[in-house]
Length: 303
Image (cartoon, rainbow, N blue to C red; front, side, top):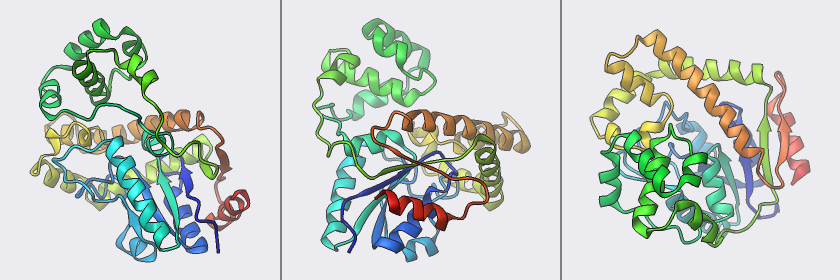
């Protein structure tokens, strides 16, 4: 019987993580825990490339469709639910296989989030109504260190930083150093898929084209009716934001498709930058034309 120690498969979007995780799960008797900040939302199916019904029949999946589109969901909730899922999987003598591209969620599980304060609904709703420029001015005044390093184009992260400052009265940067680690520690079986730039770009373009053919515009229109625009986290999802802008008349469909491809490539680059900092990561180079079974053999050797 294979070890019950969790296996982690990470990498950029469209790299082939899900295909590899499915094969691994079938090979060693595993169940998959999705590490994707958008697959948690019900209804966000096409744009997040959720596993198909057939794939879910092949292997049990966890942390997919666990939140409504009008609900908040964060890394702390992910870590809590992931721990529950690991316990359930272990009770069945199966192997937990974490698979996804959300680096913060991997970190939340493996390293913990310490004593970071929980979200305050009233404060968060107040902050979400403010212009991003206003929030950045407050952050620059109260915590210049975080202001210098934060992604200032990401409203969700800016809101969270200001929220913590207002809740505690202390700079966000200072508190990050104070929060004790509560996670399980650096993982030993952490694999990152790597593809060359041209290959990954081609795969991203194919995926985006498929998403629009599969009905991403119609899916987004339906989600708008159930509160998509009010969810600052979900609205960060690449594809959905651009389609919302298209539906609002900002650009043509062809221009929207091209923009989604650009944003996805940029996102993939940020993901790789994140995973390059992962302690102890084992890199799996997946060259064009290589079958998933060949990469699986390399992974199994690394376990």
